Length: 404
Ligand SMILES: *Cc1c(COP(=O)(O)O)cnc(C)c1O
Image (cartoon, protein in one colour):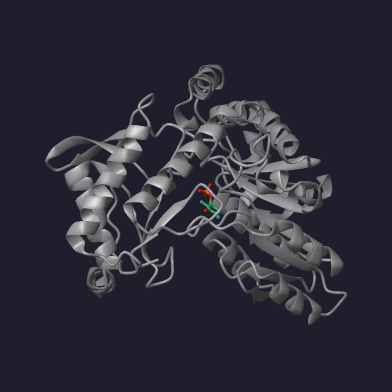
């Protein structure tokens, strides 16, 4: 059997519809973010990264770098095992305490990524709680969807951010079945924010537990970077808060926080927690330093808000439509995968601007977009450069100014 022919058949279909993914080969440079080198067959060129999830540039913060280097010298490179078999290091526990504190919870549990934390926690809860029903927001991330699917629990999808629909669906379910309402705070592709308090009100009314993915909000929202649930004063009412160490905290890893019993339950039964090598202690040390810094430092968040507002205002002045939202994410809808790729290629080639085209299945077909994430380290000149580039493109391509 010619397996490569089978693979290529599907890859060719992807290419024909414009959804084939090309990765940019970047070389990040500590101290230079958002600038990076870009490797191609013609050599290395400088680009400004406009689509990083290292939202605050913490991946190059001197304190975070030093914490990782210090821990590598102190503990070596790897953790030495799964958490159960010799892999639990002191640095992991210090980090879990820091995370529990960040969200005001009794306990926290680390995973190798945010994806794994969602997958493992939802799989475990849905599979182990007898007759469990999971009510999932229709905009939820793939990691939650896959976790719910794997759990084989009964799943009910409610309309994105629609509390009335959630309530109607909760009401129709058996009163005594355990229910989990699973949703996110900041949805990263549209940049819209969930009405968390209203969702919690409804969930509590029907005795459901709440599962909140704060991946795109931790470090950035709330007085201590505890996310939108901290900002809105409702963290103590959320049963489980999940987050990543790989985005605003600038390192890698994922976690859940909640009651001691909840975390002990996942620790004891979740295969995605148990059967994998623990994160390197140096990763834990770096993440803890980043979290501790952002708990007390407001400079990064304030400067990010300033640059986000500045980009939006400049786009408005230039007549470039972008999706309105209350977050740090600035999506510009193009609504066609081929055009989106063409624009991104042109920005990279002619202007040294790197923004990854966002296409299916990350977003629904027909809503392809460029998604800009201004950081505190993008200068006013970077923003002017980006808007000048987009303005010239808009003129050249005669894209309708009212696409959004
Ligand atoms: C990125 C992302 C995750 C996964 O986090 P990683 O640490 O990158 O694995 C989970 N949920 C959402 C909403 C995300 O965007």
